Amino acid sequence: MSARTCFVGGNWKCFGSNQSIDALVSGLLKADLSNTSAEVVVAPPFVYLSKVKEALAGKNISIAAQNCWRESEGAFTGEVSPAMLRDIGVHWVILGHSERRHIIKENDELLKKKVEAALKHGLKVIFCVGEQLEDRKSKRAQEVVTAQLDACKEHIGCWENVVIAYEPVWAIGTGEVATPQQVQEIHSMIRRWFEENISSSVAQKIRIIYGGSVKPQNSTELAKNPDVDGFLVGGASLVADQFASIIRSTS
Ligand code: PEP
Image 1: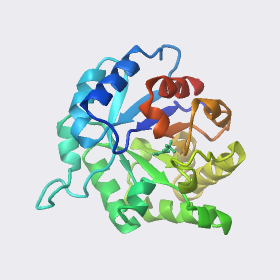
Image 2: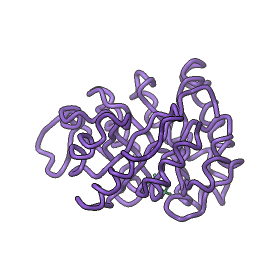
Image 3: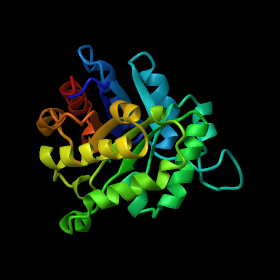
Image 4: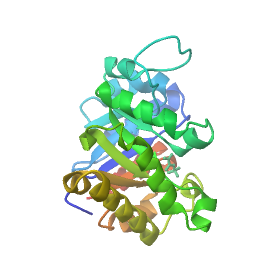
């Protein structure tokens, strides 16, 4: 693990109810995170954002939205704008998650506008990239990830408020975690991309986190990689003890 402050995000996806979220939050409040300096963020579904934010105030856990729209307001039924998220005190947003790229069919064209709008409104962005299984099998993983980074490069003026999440699609929610070698290979390639396309200083500072079936059983090993600066956790973030243990493993 590097000198960069580690970052651990919990993506609650489309899971939860008032009752289960109360239980999860109460587990997080009880969790011992005193020995970790990691920056921790959880992303509940939109309708629970305010409630979770209030409940976790004082615990040093920030709140992320799982998505946002590309405009500040307008006739866009069903969308939530970055300005609205800022208005309710949300500081982070996840953009480019593979479930939005591949199930909702969000493409690079839309994503770069969303990233630009989110940053313009003062949100920090967890920007997800990652290849699908067929890309990996045909040895195109690096090409796919590079293309996803290239697509938004012109639309990000300042990278200070961006965290990159490398999430191979074949490892998300499947229980099939990428090996530490596979993860390090892509993370170092991403850092090289920053070196060559943005600047050395950004390359050194930007946090590159891994997501894809991270569990307490595999996080310590993954966290040893020099270019792994933390994790984006799906399933295990819905269990307070597991999430807390993953956070502690980054110390
Ligand atoms: C995710 O949703 O970003 C994710 C990595 O999910 P999981 O940890 O369940 O694979």
